[in-house]
Image 1 (cartoon, chains in turn brown, yellow):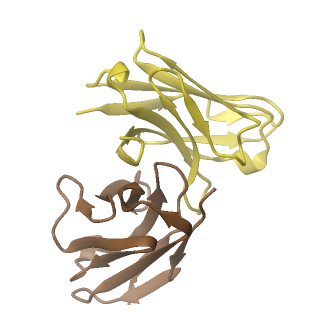
Image 2 (spheres, helix red, strand yellow):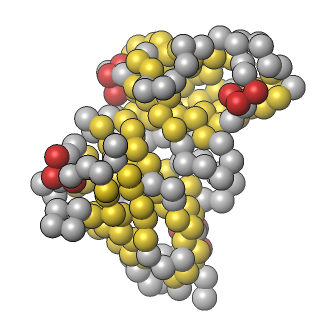
Length: 105
Length: 118
């Protein structure tokens, strides 16, 4: 079973700043199997990225994904007010990381 | 565009079996690919429960495998979850989902809160 570890646990940033979120896997996985989600309070998660670097339908291009092997990154180039939320990575449609909360500084 | 809706009791007694059904509309469950259940305890992160292929092949979280059963009913365009011997720690919002290509969840239900309490 692959374990995903996300860091940091909380990221305190201001609107307009760049956010860099990390997801590390306990063993190497195919980049095609890595997805990222955004979740806001009281809502179901929303798919942001799949295949590590492909944006889901309707996701703005300020969101970017990269990585391979065991290290993956979600980048938000310029934070908009609606981007403050919790972000999760997932591998192969199964295990999730514990989440990174992006909060307003 | 697929729409998913969970249904089932919101309160289950300890040691009993939690049963939920997900009704899919706007998409044939027989078209696949995979369908899944995910839960989220209050104030905590997401936990994958398992996935089921429309053919009935299942994949379960090893930590829950002994208590989980998933099934699919293509005639009703539904799939279901049963979790036996529930305890308070099973209290969570339960989401049903479509798992595209078996690798990512592209459609989610709105979630249903199930509380385990006597």
